[in-house]
Image (cartoon, rainbow, N blue to C red; front, top):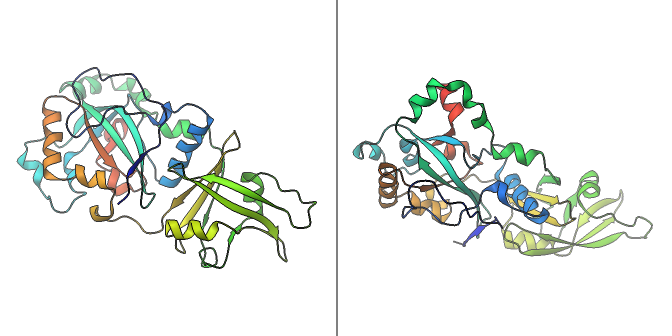
Length: 313
C-alpha cells in the first residue's frame, strides 16, 4: 500500500491551549483553510472534489460531538468494546486541526482530524446559552464554495479506458478548463500538463478532430489509465486554478467497505491498542486524532457538528 500524501503546504504555529499530543495524534497539522497561494487552494479544491458530494469537514476551532461507539463500529472485529472502557456515549471536542491525505496506491482521499475534549461542564453551559451557537455552524465547505475554480468531472466509458482509445472531453468542459486551442489550425492541438493529488505531472496530447469534431486526449492518456488502474465507471476530474495550473483527480466507482481496503493509517488507528490511546487522551483532556473518509457518510457519523447534535437530540 502506498504512502500517505499531505496536501497542505502551510503549517500553523499555533499550539493547543491544553493537553499534549497523545501517541495516536500527529504534530504539525494544517487546517484545510490555511493553505496559501493559488496553487495550494487548487490542490485543496481537488481534494474536496475527489472526496465527493457528501463531504463534510469541520473547521478548526469548531466544537463537534465525537461518538466512541460509532468510531469502533467502523471495524467489525471490536463490537461492544466501548462499554469495557467506561466511556460516555458522546464527547464534546474542539477541533484543533484538520489535515488532508491521499492514499498513494489508490488516490483515495481522507482526513485526519485532531480533537481535544472540552470540560465536562461544557454541554450544560452551552445549553444555558444556546442562542450563541450560530457561530459553530460554519465549516470549511462554505469557504470552498466561494473559491471554486474551473472544473469538470466525467464518468469514464469503456471507450475512455480502452488501451487503444483516448479520452473524449465534452466541448464546453474543454473550453472552460483547458487552455484555448487555435481553431485556425487544420488540426488544432496542444500539450497539456496536469498534476495529480501527489504532485506527479501527467502529459496529454489535446486534439480537436473527427466528424463531427470533438475534443480528445490521446498521447499519454493510456499510460495514465494503466498507472491509476482506472475502469469504466470511475470518474476523472480536471481543475484549472486562477494561475492557469491544471490538476486532475480520481473518484473511484468502487466504494470502500471495510478496513482491509481503507488507507493504512486508518487501519492503524482502528485497533484495540490505538483506541486505548484515544481513551487515555479523553480521560486526561489531551489531543487525539481520528481518521475518516469524509466522502462516505457511514464512516464520518462518529463525528458530527455540535448544532447537528442538538437539532437531532
